[in-house]
Each structure stands twice: as structure tokens, then as C-alpha cells.
Image 1: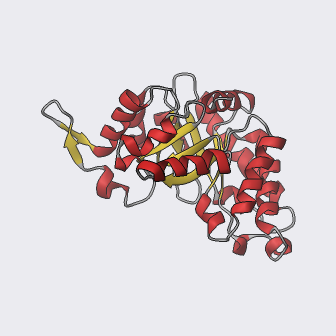
Image 2 (image 1 turned 30 degrees about the horizontal axis):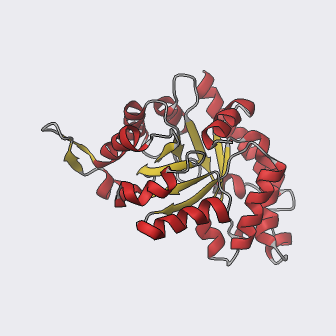
Amino acid sequence: MHFMQSLQQAWTRNDSLVCVGLDPEPAKFPAHLRDAPDAVFAFCAAIVDATADLVCAFKPQIAHFAALRAEDALERLIAHIHAQHPGVPVILDAKRGDIGSTAQHYATEAFERYQADAVTLNPYLGRDSIAPFLERADKGVILLCHTSNPGAADLQDLLVSNGQGGSMPLYQHVAQIIARDWNRHGNCALVTGATWPEQLGEVRALVGDMPLLVPGIGAQGGDVEAVVRHGRTSNGCGLLISSSRAILYAGHGEAFAAAARTAASELRDTVNRYRHG
């Protein structure tokens, strides 16, 4: 199924805009799992199974697996999500960006090796660096626009020509060109950080109903009400509000998965209170 169709159905079926980031850090695992064989897969799969009916997507972060030499666990985790929780899309958080054959190999990595439904990408090398991903009309292409980190303003807020004798921040130009020129298959989305809600609203005004992946809720301190107010579409959707650490490590004992479920449920309810209010 097309990524966008899966996402829209998950928004409705689970009444949720919550995306759970899967960022395994074994030092934070419960003691009974920390030294267990296949701990990374066991931990992440337990989180997935406990929260799948509460979310609109899962977002495994590739560096967290690669640093642990756990790419095989990542492959099996995505296969587990597809097999046990069909209809919940998987976003590979890789932030790739390169040109030519390298970009093609990155697309193969994301969509063939890992079987992800979507991937995060860096658009700053230009359209040709994203072309191999855009050509996969069934897959989601989620491009960095205005990120959640404190240094986002260093470059993303720089003024550039708007082509009409005026100027605009670079992130707005990125949003505009992706919505206008790159989204021919309707498979693009943008990353807009929760820590910059006004900029998120400006992006929403530029891109219409294009989905926005919003990191920065939870550990980074993003405000849920501001995100929903500035970022939702007219039908109350349009957002993937991502939380990782606040859900993954909500509990520290053998009931860690139940604690993660409680945290995910509370976030969904908070989002929905502002979304439907």
C-alpha cells in the first residue's frame, strides 16, 4: 500500500497523530534485558507490540542500530512490524543525502534492504539527490525543513531571494520548492521541529495538507498544544508527532512495555484534546 494511504488510514483507525521513535540505548534498557542475547530486537519489539494500536507510525533511527552493529535487528524489527501490525507505516530515520549512484544505493537500502515505507532525507544537495526516492511513488519521502535542534536557525533561518525582489527564510524556500516542484507523486512530507511552533505554522501555510513529521516533543520540550494549533490540517490530521525517549524509557523494570504504552496513550490523549477541542 502507498505510504500516504497507510498513514491516513492509521490516523483514522487509531485516532492518533503519535509517531513512536525507536532509538535503542542498551544502557537504558531494563536490567533483565541489558545483557540478554538479541536485547535490541527484544526491547524494540516489546515497545512496538505494546503501542501499535496507539500510533500512526513507527520511526526507527538507523544510527542507534548501526552503532550497536544491530542492523540485522533493525531488518527483523521492521519485518515484525509489517507482519504483526500491518497498516502501521515504518519511517526509517536516516537523513540521507547524496548524489548519483550513491543516492540510488541509499534508496535501495531504505526500501529494499530494510523494507521501510518512508525515509527521512536531507534536501540540501538539491533535487537530483532526492530523485531516486521521489521516483518511488509508493514510498514516503520526508525531507528536513526546519529541525528541532537549537542550531537549526544557524542556516535554516538565513534569508534568501524569493525570486520576486524580496526575501524569505531558507526553510520556507525549501518548503515551497518541495511542495511546488518535487511532490509530483504526492509522496513528500516535511520535518518541522516542535520546538519552533510558529515556524511550523508558516510551513503549514506554504504546503497545504502535506504531512509534517514533528520531532521534539517530550525530552526536547516541545509544546503539544502549540504544535497542534499551528500544524494540524483542516480535518485535524496532517501531523506525525514524534516522541522517542519519553515513551521508550518511561519504565525501567520488567513492566517497561506497559509503562511505554501508558506514556504513548497519555500523549495521544493530550494531542487529541487539542486536536478535537
